[in-house]
Length: 88
Image 1 (cartoon, rainbow, N blue to C red):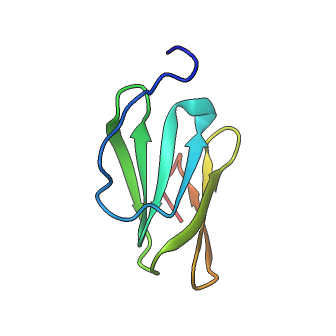
Image 2 (image 1 turned 30 degrees about the vertical axis):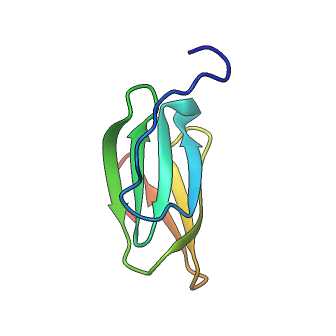
Image 3 (image 1 turned 90 degrees about the horizontal axis):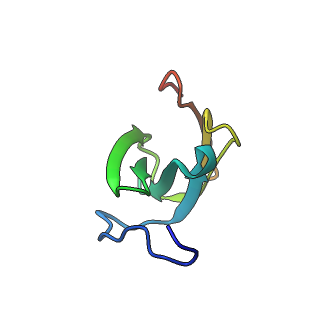
């Protein structure tokens, strides 16, 4: 894609409170109330969803290699996921 070119656009299924680039740009993590949704920016395709029913997420980030994703909620809870094993 050219610099500044829109890669994809779609309506969000729910309120997005934060975004993070995962795995060097291979995935986009979207923090939603109760879950983190992963999308492939190149195609816009849904790839995975990690659930945690604690309310809205205030932030989301990923380790540089994309194997760990962290999300923080409005309730002060921090959740870490091992994305290789899909476990919390």
